[in-house]
Image (cartoon, rainbow, N blue to C red; front, side):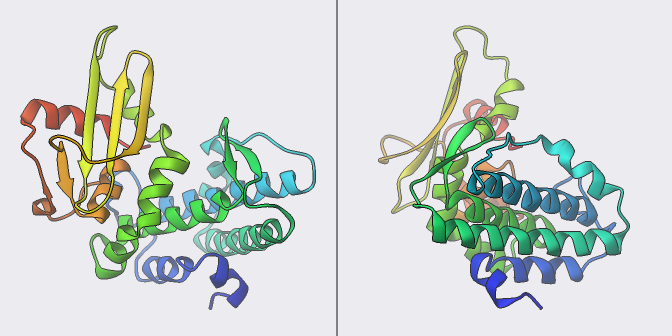
Length: 256
């Protein structure tokens, strides 16, 4: 049972918990390198770090964001210890997020992974993580598709996360000093998501639809593509860009 004050801040926690409990810890997932247990350790580290950074800012003593090595202690825990730690860290994040919402302007900027984000980012990012990694457990069930289709999921991925989504993919492309990749991900009735990578770096932004799309899909699939995932049903996305352009853009969108 998720406490009401936690559910109010992290409404996606309960569906994630049900999905985890329906599986064995060593079950495989759509995130090919991770089992259910690996995802739970990752989520525990996420909740802890989001709360730690936001609370330190609230206390007037900002701290740097730690790397994903923060997950190591959780991977050493027993299954029951890990489960308890996950729920505890989510409750702490909800508590700190609620305090920040009371005490700070939503426009207040806080350092996170080398960039500044606004106060609502911390709870919202955990919500996105819960939705995305629940999909890793369940695939394209109705709950996952509805959550991924929410407009804020696209906006958060592009505006609040943005360039980090392209770092891994760009590093795997042999662009050279003159190379450049640009792709347009289109969902009818919304802004395009434009991704670019060249010798100077990578960028992702929302833009008015213009010209042909590299990939057209529903909003849920577009979020999955941005995070390096693929829907179970490939007929949910369409492309006329040609094999080379499509291969390059999909390689760029490798996610974390």
